[in-house]
Length: 257
Ligand code: NDP
Ligand code: 8X3
Image 1 (cartoon, rainbow, N blue to C red):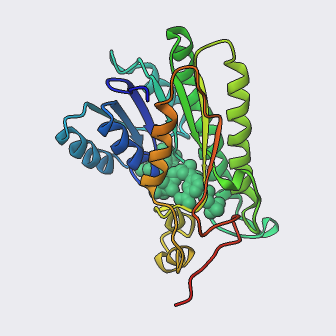
Image 2: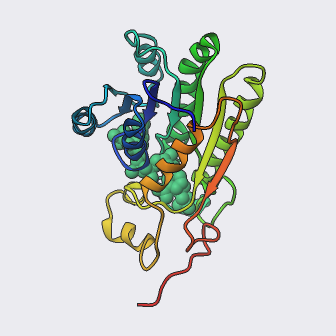
């Protein structure tokens, strides 16, 4: 196992779920953390917890969709925080679950702006320094939804298929440099994801995980940490992580009550 001690890791969407779990796992492994999201209060709370464990943490209030802010924030990081070794492109969301022909265009735009364009902006402003420093690892959080489309998943699935293509494209374009690109693609993980999808309808969100054992955010953080702690010549290109109870996005084993 290679160490990530004292390496600088930028995690987007660190205020909740998988991003927050990655922050904890990385902090335990001794990394220095840049935590980014829109909800500053949440980030400050997590940062206080991690600093209490002895970690160095920088908090960034950053909406990945806001290109000028992403650019200015990332290009004005103080020394040594500008020397990012690991980028976890995790910020993402789904909105709604509707047949495409009835879909909300605003929901589509929010998913496309966040999951595709936001990931691109952050990558564009972080990776050049990795190339010039000749070190770095980008981990994109994709989804099983990027492998298999499910009913009413249309645009969300398309954004995650795009993330899969972007991981592949970046890997090809970085060939010849030591910078690695991995895609970690989870199935069902119990986080705030479904509450966001159903705009705070906790009852509907709860039904997604009813009578089933989903993955936890910590399960995914484990896999991300595994990716970034392989020897420098090893790249885990793509990892699909599913709960045992889930075969495909729609084929799920629900226990009898
Ligand atoms: P959560 O809703 O718990 O977390 C999503 C995170 O993304 C939050 O920290 C949120 O922070 C951040 N985020 C959303 N929009 C933006 C934005 N515009 N700018 C910056 N940050 C943003 O869900 P998960 O932890 O489950 O989701 C994390 C990733 O995992 C997503 O990419 C999701 O698509 C993917 N995924 C999730 C699965 C699941 O079943 N849960 C399965 C497969 C993939 P804030 O609101 O503070 O900005
Ligand atoms: C999140 C998992 O199956 O709801 O990417 O699309 S799913």
